[in-house]
Amino acid sequence: MTSPMGESAFGEIIDGAKNGDGRAFEHLYRWLAPEITTFATVRGTDDPEGVANEVFFRAFQKLDRFQGRSDAFRAWIYAITRNLLIDTHRAGARRPDIASNEVPDLATAGADVEALDLLSTQRVTRVLSYLSDDQRDVILLRMVGDLSLQQVSVIVDKPVTAVKALQRRGLRRLQSEVLSEVVRP
Amino acid sequence: MTDPDHAARWALDDEELESLMIGATPDDLGRVGNPVAEFFVDARNARGVRQPSPDGALIGLFGGDLAGLDAEIPERPRMSAPPHPGGNGSSDLFRGPGDDLGLSSVGGSGWSGPEAAPITGAHDVRPRRGAHDAAPVADDGFTIPAAAGDPFAGRPDDPFAGRPDDPFAGVPSEPLADDPFAGRPNDPFGERPNDPFGERPADPYGPRPGGPFADDPYGAPTIADAPLRGSLLAERTAAHNRLVVPPTEAPATSVGAFFGQVFEPTTPKVLMGVATVAVLLTGGALLGVINLPFLGGGGVDNQAITGLEAQTEGGIVGQESETGEPAIAEQSSTVPADAGSSVVTVPLPDVATPLTASTTTVVVPRNTTTPTIASPTTESTVEETTSSVEETTSTVDPSSTTETTDPSTSSTETTETTVEETTTTTVEETTTTESTEPPPAENNNE
Image 1: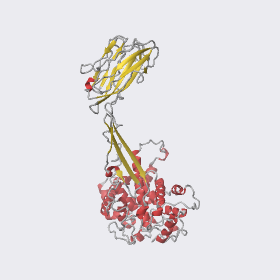
Image 2: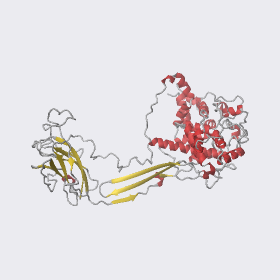
Image 3: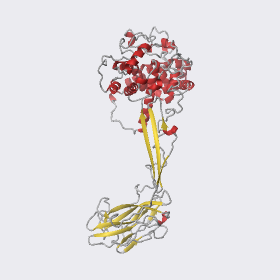
Image 4: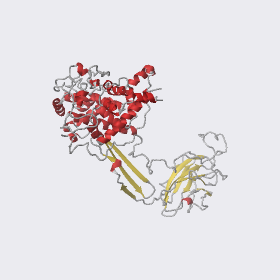
């Protein structure tokens, strides 16, 4: 998927960013940060905005050596995001759980919240959590990132055929979980 | 419980699922109201709900100098979920405020340059599916033609291609397979069954026969409460490999000492132990307990070192080993109490040379409650066998302990160093370094 700004404009922006133009950085950020945030959110991280910031911070640090089209830039950003999320997950697994002092807001608990929850990101995240990590990554990279199978296969470092299989199994599992949540006798 | 009939009615086939995933709407498929199809709407609609601030990334980049950045950037509203009435088969999920701003979302032509278009909406004005489908790269999920100029195609230095060791493949969530702290049999910090400092089930002083402080665990013992008298009959408890000393009927003037614990040696030549010495004033008043670690070695039968004697001026109070033989070959002579103190000599097992032949003297000043140990400045000599430390560095399989990720931001290096001592201690030192590096952008060249 190409950038909405067009390749020529993207080239100007990426050159500007390499030269330290803050506005160029922000253009790139504004272009992809929302979907990166979404990707991080539905993948289950606690701080998607922080992830987005960290992703672009890392990307900007190495931007001077980047050359390519906008779709390559997108895939590159998603690769950074996925790896950062894996890093974060690993780091979290090594840290002991710390009990939260936050008290749930009981005033918001109710049927209306439950109804809204069906449409919320939490529900999406919960259903996606039933998938394996690879299945979830493939589907999210395809669905949220609008990446091609080939790009996804590059990011997850698996053959395209394996990505197709992961996608197919993930979608079936996704459907099964959605139906099991929604469909009641 | 799921109703199978309803589930079957709403189930979508693979093709429908995939088309939903890559942008088709429920309306496109005639599946409006289908919970599965609507789920994809929800999932896609989550996009852009939160508009992150670039400050974090940009401040980190510019060190807080955000001058020149345009702060007049409106928030991105939530995308509309319902399908566009005039949809032409493409996804209207991408229809965002960019449409309202007059920016075409088709073909990505709404951007004429970095200075021309508003920043907001740039993300929203993504090409609709129709335009996306018309792109050179087929997005049907099955056919991937080699698009001209595809930055991923055929690059010899493609950083994503052919990485033999995917560090992220099959990484279990918990516990980590490469967790350096998991399941180490020789973990020096792991639970040790013969931990000399572990829980000791038996009070070495035994039940106190009575007295005003009998039930007070913190009460100061008196002469009448002193349990350690006379001979020290050592008993080994099977569960803890420990020797305890039951109360005896010896005169109250004795000074008790007993063997606290004996490690099961890790090598047959070395023994380690802690002698727990109960120090009593003449008359039986308990001053306290001193743990005296010592080393031994030389291939001595561990069973022989089961006793530790205590001596007073009256001679050997008692000693015993499980083998029935005196555990101490050489009896240390009792040092008579001088004018100001009672000197208690506690000989430790004198095992075969070149073992440790240690004698620790516990000097108990009179009229005080704090015993002091004279060793090693006076009579305590500890001879340690010369131990050679062989340091070896094990070579670890890189696939399991060293991971290199590219362009991943994760790199986990694990170095294991095993230090083998010829004495008793095996020190295993594990250093785990996890570093995160930004992806090498040079890999995305061309």
